Amino acid sequence: MTDSTYKIIELVGTSNTSWEEAARTAVEEAGKSLKDLRIAEIIQLDMTIDNGKVTAYRARINVSFKYVKEED
Image (cartoon, rainbow, N blue to C red; front, top):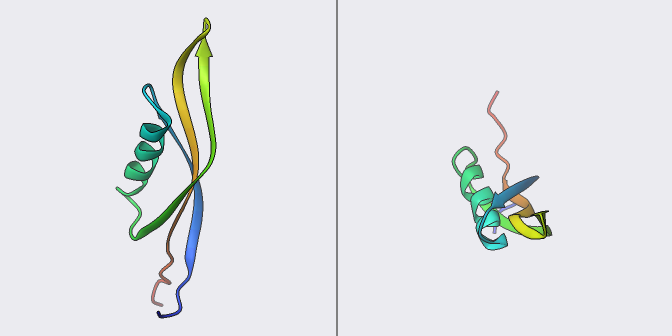
């Protein structure tokens, strides 16, 4: 294994159906602009409630990706 450096960012995904879908949404959206995504760690799950009913699920996640130094 070669030496590598990874950057970690925090994302929040939302879904009307489930926490899993909320997390998937965050990762897939990030994957459109970030390359080499490696690990996603769910750090918090919550939901919004309206009139006693769950209306949305939210997943806060940390995502790591390989850091590549730009050439001078």
